[in-house]
Amino acid sequence: MSGMAGRLLSAADLFPGGVNSPVRAYRAVGGDPPMIVRGAGSRVWDAQGHEYIDFVGAYGPLIAGHAHPAVENAIRNAAANGGPFGHTSPAEVELGRMIVDAFPSIERLRFVCSGTEAAMSALRVARAATNRDLILKFEGSYHGHSDALLAKAGSGMATLGLPGSAGVPAAVAATTLVVPFNDLDAVDAALDRHRVAAVIVEPVVANAGVVLPLDGYLEGLRTLTRRRGTLLIFDEVITGFRVARGGAQSVFGVTPDLTLLGKIIGGGLPIGAYGGRAELMDLVAPVGPVYQAGTLAGHPIAMAAGAATLQLLDDAAYARLELLGQRLEEGLARALPRGRIVRQGSLLTAFVDDFPALHRRFRSAGVLIPPSQFEAWFISTAHAEQDVDRAIEAAAA
Ligand code: PMP
Image (cartoon, rainbow, N blue to C red; front, side, top):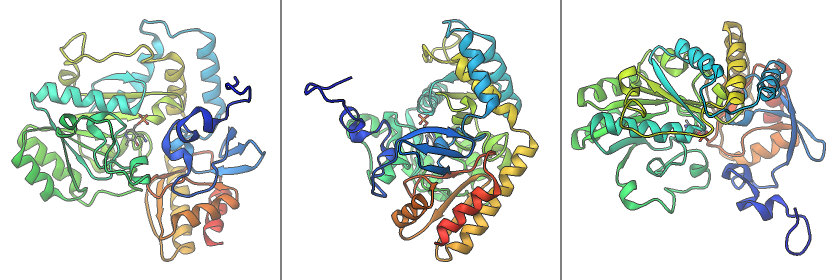
């Protein structure tokens, strides 16, 4: 509890930058980040008792808002049952079925504990399947913090202005090709020049702010990769169950070889998943030669929270998210005439000249948005029209 001097250690003493994930330190917007003690619905409260309307949404998982009663109950019931068991439990089968139902491209999947793990593991499968080492990613996309995927990454890497991470062996970095998003010629040229195991893409980029794929771009990636025997991996860690039940692949009608999921499927608890055609997934141990494992993978509490969350996501929920998204987009466009608002469903970014000033304005109006121009804002089914209007007023102030 206490340090050597006998005083209580603070977050700043205990964690690098006072945080357990870099963007939380508010380096890009300035000011001290609030310490959040509680959330309910669309609201969170800080240690001083200030109430905020929350558009951070834990960076994606909380599509039903904070502490939704159905999710909370599922967590309580699962916790009361004990576990994890070091054996398969029915909750894994239940959540697995819901995912396979929603994603026709996924016949078989593996649960892991984060999006990072999902991406890292899918690359291993792709390399094994193709017997090739190189992967191709896009500038400003983020696929978690595994060594191979930190080149020119978005999210916190972009927030901190870092081109890549220290500590990544040059030999590993050399296996990653990076090209600009929305430029099919660049992909075509790279695939011509190199034997690439997989192209990994956020079908709607959410880690460089929200960036939409140009018309035909995802289809183009599908054609170019198929032609070269390169696998196409859709990172739907954010977009899965967010932009539609079946993710961006259902919205744009493009079928990847492998899909990465996370965030929403765990209802706010640690989770990730990767999946695809059975013959690809059967490369994974114990059936195949690709090793991948996890003590806490398929954790019954995460499975229960995820299943309870997915159960809430009916057509009405997506219709409501779309309406709220439209309202926020239109309101922000009026309030910020020199800004650019980019949105897909309940995922949105306001690109403005002075983001730190915008963030300060929101915070003083009691509205929390991500403390970075490069992170998306998340709307939940718990947001009311008035919550959205409060955000619009804050932007206009
Ligand atoms: N892929 C995408 C598209 C993400 O946005 C993120 C995290 N924001 C990840 C992967 C990594 O997920 P995690 O933080 O759970 O490791």
